[in-house]
Length: 345
Image (cartoon, rainbow, N blue to C red):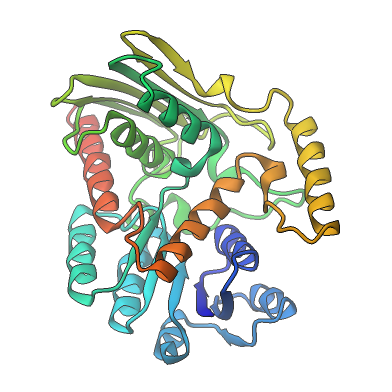
């Protein structure tokens, strides 16, 4: 049984904690968050080691095997280093850190520690993305030429039924590293690299906009190129669109010498009907004693369960995670390259 600590119980941290409950051989033994309400929620599901300071949790690491870090971006570097020094394996929400220098230092710390680290590049685990990559590997699109990806949502302004204030750090570039580009564009820059299959990628052009007059950009467009195989890509992300889940303005289109493939042909046509079907299937699975598919009814959110499950499977089998620290470094290098190009213009 692997004992896990959850560091940060905001929206994503809570989601990771609940997903851990469905992974066999995993026990959430400790959590850390400044919110008493968040700690009480963890206590209500059976977590007894509660800390208001994540550094204190790290000091009690002798009772843990791994940590899941879901803190604000600017705390990633410090918390990861503390976890590695404590001898823990680490799963961290993206970005790995907010500067290339911090990411490079983390890569070196991971190598020095001998521990495993995985970055939460959840979009690699989305079912439509997995199917697209499989189709490409089978040659259905021919030789890749152009990849276009776009995602436009309401970013940090999204909320549940009861709206809550957006934390101050979201709009402080020194704490986030930026706005929509590092928040959403980070995922799609990673996916471009993932699909192009090249370790070398460069940013040809980038554009940032401030439609909402925020201290950080709410719109970003970037043109990428993989020089080794001449694949180019266009990425468009934004926070400026009012949307309510399950509405999800996202698409990934791959153009090749033999045709094109689109994620829109692979996602459920009616997400409400999909949710009803998956909910019924999970109910039947429970009745007959089978494991349910956590979050499958949401379609998009199931990727979060699949990535955390992959991380723990790697720990159990002593395998290297599919998204190690160096992948986070390469992605943040390109994000910073895009920011530099936009400022230059």
